[in-house]
Length: 250
Image (tube, rainbow, N blue to C red):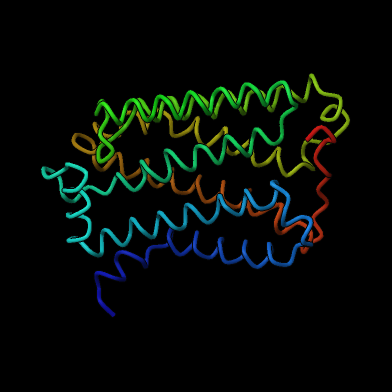
């Protein structure tokens, strides 16, 4: 087998998330059809599918340099043809952010859902504006868009945890037995932990590459844990995990 292929697709991180997705699909298909139609099950599955797709796409760009070079040229980047950050900007920073916001929104009472809708609209408008006017090109680091993305996610997580002191449904529940609690906790922890690293990404690339690689290891390790929390509600019925139903307002 081509050494370039093994180098691109054979790393432990990619194999780990591929395996998590396969397990997630198996458990999802074993769910009752009513649960498969429930947003609290199919949206976590989507949050497994999309990262696996874009991480494998990023690996492919490293395997096929000509493809990566041509896409960069199409996006206007001829200076750094080896960059594949556009993959993460499009799929992680844009699509995954929206999916996370929709997931957290699904756990909130109606009045707080309105706030998340405004955050989603603001994020979309600002992202389109920033990219359209080339304030942050799609092929380069986008710390401003990430800051807006992370800010919206952290606010949504804050609203979720506020529900435990303001909503009867959550007051009566045991948070440790709610799949949503573990999901939102690690969403909050992940985005808090990577905030400074991501907004200084370009500096780390050029000035502190070794340190940046160390931080990247922490980043991907936390992301694996976050994906496992997305797997929890899918696996719970088959593994007989004793999770409570989400509060009735959800």
